[in-house]
Length: 131
Image (cartoon, rainbow, N blue to C red; front, side):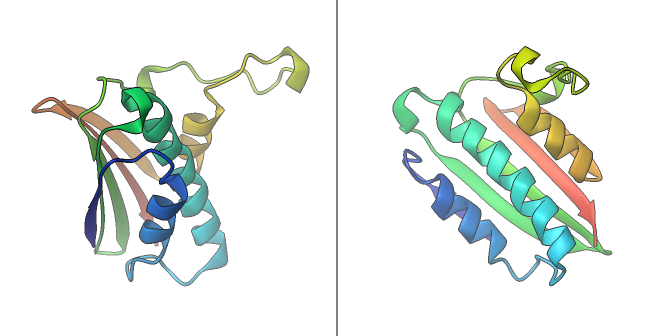
């Protein structure tokens, strides 16, 4: 299932719901929780940071092959590899932690594989989970 959203300002919820209604999403509450959280965090980052004022696009796509669900997010916003960001120190008390970085950390913990590439002036983030 594939769709392009443009512009993306204020469409985070719509994008997440589109992805979560894909026939590729498993009917397993535990997996759905992991997928939804990962999708929400990554889509929110694109909506908030990839473009000035959310005036860009995001292409989203799901596919299921050999028991592996793939979710691809593609945008032509500012180049940014979230996998290069350092993991937050989750052993610190909440009040001692700097703001930011927890979303992609959670995504990396919940998904079986997360990959980033920058191709043809586009950020492409692909998340995979075994179902």
